[in-house]
Length: 449
Image (tube, rainbow, N blue to C red; front, side):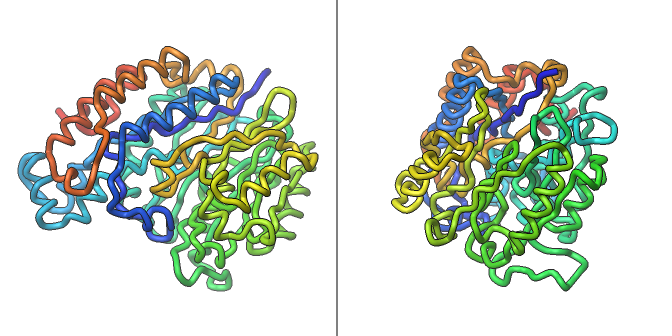
């Protein structure tokens, strides 16, 4: 039976803004308070989805969330009508309002961790929504994320959904941004690679000193247990604390894997040789051969990697066995990174082509091509069981472009977040979107009696 890797890209929400909310994310902090363009951001993301679908890659859409999160503000003691709550929060606690308006759910690499049926004991595709408890603006996402995923992957015979882990620091979970999978073929058993920043309970593990390590070993182990993964198909690796302190807040900022290929920076892991040895051994046990493409610091520094998001790229398998690397425009604008990429495609590695996309609106908030997508390996039968309303087609692309143009503003600054009309616009847009994508009532405002 045929199997595919399907990329489900996050659709940028109507409240896309530069709030500078993500401590440890250099781009997010450096662009704080600048004006954003939600319409352009959504169009840029849709253009990438459509382009990849046109190239023959399986592509889907993952809906944004309701913002501002008025229900969350009510939990924090604000009362009155929705408009009253927004205006009072703007007067008394503007940082909370900014956090409640974040469109960060666009980066669906953090939405969940996904294990395909070939790896799991019960033969189903397993999803665990990420708790994202390191940052308030992201910690409020997982209830809606779970409902949206359940509406996309409905059939219990094929799909299993797990709620987010306990929302405490010991089980900090950032989803697929710290997880990848290696395999000979998508439908065959593979090796799932979990990368963590620290251990919650064992002080022998080193930790970063400047920025927080968002993923714990214990969270990764819990997800592996929930998904019913076998020991011979799991590798855990610690991210290098020194690169976390240089702005590498997730593993997908310093490494990306696909198939039998790991594309990584020399300094990505705490003990790279031991990590590679484990991956080679376990992948060999599944009939595969690891091909590690290590980028030396002499060619690309960690600072260059963070500024360009070289490793926050999509590594995609083509029908002829070669791979396409999808990178943001910032890679071409970095002289050292671009020189490396021009050489990479001539060195006999599986990476035979580099495609550049303009994702500036997302990049300025610290998210590149890989942040915008959640990868799901599916058999032909499982793909047929997915809600077909979320699968990218030419008509859906045109419909979504028209939807964006009707509902999205072309400029948004912090002061605009205090406008109650923005909530009305967001709800109106999302109500229509659920009909376009055939999701049903997944948003809090739709579920109110």
